[in-house]
Length: 163
Image (cartoon, rainbow, N blue to C red; front, side, top):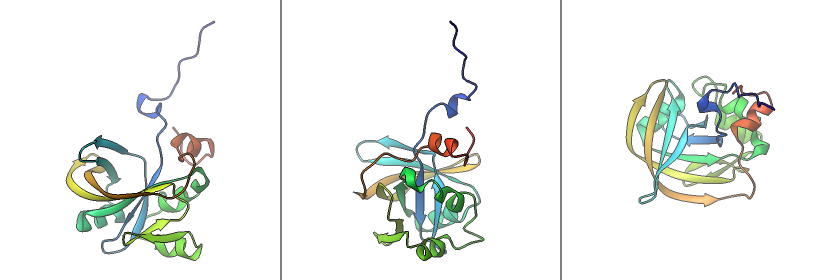
């Protein structure tokens, strides 16, 4: 019996956690992010890649601080608001506040149902094609809720993304 080889591209074979970035800057915003990786244990550093041309990128370049939020599977529909619309055109924070989905932590808006939050400070950055890469120190963190993370395979199953 022969097994059928996957048609997924190598970079899509690994299931990635889904995060939301909360930034302040000139116009507070939230943005979906999956290109995230721990890069150092001591000091604890995380690399976050933000899409070029976004309000979040402009905020992070200006402020150098932001919050990374690990999302829960129940939050999958937020990807349509936080990832498929531009914060330059809509006020995402106000929309989330109207739905009573927002809390505050470390001076940033956060999603109440997120599993965990990390306050990050940029220590280095570079261009990376259609994304801009930020290496950040973890300033503070907090676990908010129990459960498993929202992942790219869940978004694929729900028809929100294709992988």
